[in-house]
Image 1 (tube, rainbow, N blue to C red):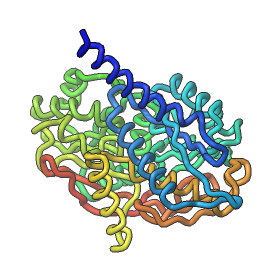
Image 2: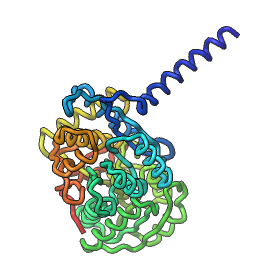
Image 3: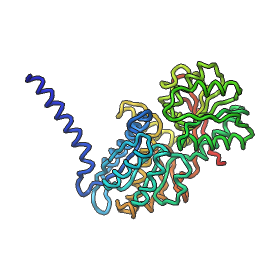
Image 4: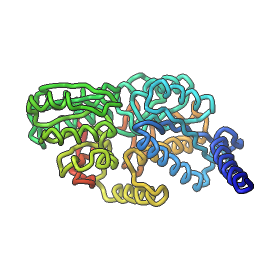
Length: 390
């Protein structure tokens, strides 16, 4: 009984300690500056959300080690991280929590479907928001001076992939599948425009959802139409099982997708079906100069050392987005979001994802894209290209 009680006390002590660390986000001293982060920390995209969160944690650590002084006082940055589960309703709830916590800026959300509705709330509260991954064009087309992104949008990403499919993969006929999410539908639509503009034709457009695992009916129908390539608008959690079933049905054509499938996790989700140089995807951003490449490699090495995990996808963009917020604070010599947010639009920042500056809408300027393929478990760069707009 004594040992059982001792174990309970030990567990209680650990739990109280964890709660103290988390609650310290809301109980902070006068020189603390709260930065919000939102991503899916639960559900089938949790691996990406936690990757994002780890990037934010690393940025906050580096900022606090830099002994930054703003308005004559040394400041301590505190991260408040919320889970939106990739659900728009939960996303707005998470946004309200951050607003109520009086954060001075937000890094997030991960998905377009949660980013867009939350952006209206941050705008009304006067809080700047930088998404590390939301690609829906609408996000930065609402006229909000508080909305920015550090990745290419769907027009740039999808259009470039459509052009690449025709001109580099020699595809003339494509079958498109999208998961009906804001991101999936958006990138699929822009891929279609880019593909057709480059001379290809869409022979079928099928639909699924972001929770599906059975695609045999859709894929059987697609197989009969004999496409040259299959494009999927959605995330890796759905793409993995889909690739497995494509293999089972004996469909031998390249499979393409946007940044949502372009993850280190995809080989685990797809298994042996991922094959050798048969999957093509693109990430926003592309590093050509040696200095930027070295900086990115250094970040990835350090990320693995400190987290014990490889970068999955967006964590470098989260890191840069967090740094950009603070660069704007330093330039304005203020942590007041209504003062420093005006400086974000003028930022020219050299980050771990390359040089970053914003256009009049809050989109990243001169966007490059990196085309990747997979050699079994290894994610391999094919080439860096300049984005195409439709």
